[in-house]
Length: 97
Image (tube, rainbow, N blue to C red; front, top):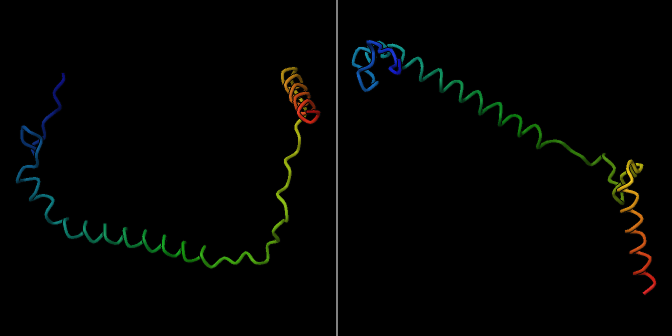
């Protein structure tokens, strides 16, 4: 059954028939005004939010001089210990030369 069931409101190419256009006609203006109202509400909420966020004043928030250093995590495996030891050895060799 690969064929979709046909409705009396659509023709064989699934385009709107004249009866469907007539059935939707009384709701056309109402739907347009509803859509415009929803769009206006959405845009007004977005504009109000942007305006409210733009008024924030962060002058009372202290700014640190240097960025905070992240805490060091303990070594959990042998690979990390070996790689850290190898890096330290390379650093020492560079400092000697």
